[in-house]
Length: 330
Image 1 (cartoon, helix red, strand yellow):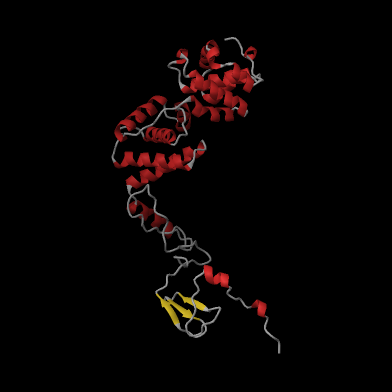
Image 2: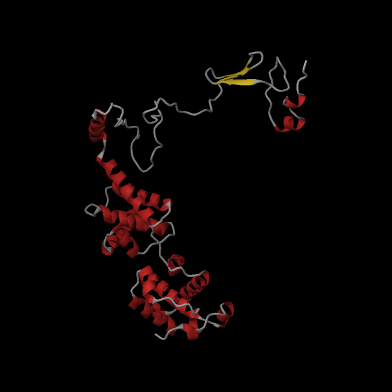
């Protein structure tokens, strides 16, 4: 008669007893209890003697069951997750478009049911949300910005604000404000190119939203744009750091008063690339930043005039490759 393999039998060590709560059957008192959870009855039962050790246990298995066959989809009895950007209980019944043997009856019923039950307000919201997400994905904006833009749009629709304004301009303004609030600013020209809405219309709607919703858009500095512009121009980190330093010091120049942050950022990049002896053409910077070549050269001229305030002796110790002789004369 073969002897049982003792090493294969699980045992509870003293360490396990100290760090775990072990449930033992009071009748069997086995060192390794055989406890069975019967979810159908909600009981906790000893698998050796059948003694009920507890009742009303919680079923931790999946909530849903599947009634699908091999042909159709999986019609789980639980619905989709609630969308916080839509109103109502969101428990509408949907008639499947297939499963009628190809007669087309299910498709017709689905269309008729959709027309009768769909709300115009909800349809507009869903369509606007699709456009917002599509535009945000087109320029690689994070999901958080899309959510903020959708929330702003929902407030406009719920409170029936901005009557008479086009839906495209409202969506463009919501994306613009969301970018500012999430510290991922985009220029008016970039939003115009994305949404194909004139800059004047976007500006008017943005001001109106600020007044009605009391939303703080916040300002945009040239430093906020520098990393993205330098990345799009394939410039190294050294040029980016110099351009940021120049734009920070340029705020103290009176000659640049009234210049937009985008123009200053473009001119600082032009200055930094020539300063390090790796010049970048103004045409390439213009195409990337959206600033005209004339504006870049005029802003660069003001930087060149105030070069003594922008560059000091310690600057050349940190960046030995830099030289004023590399700078083109304006």
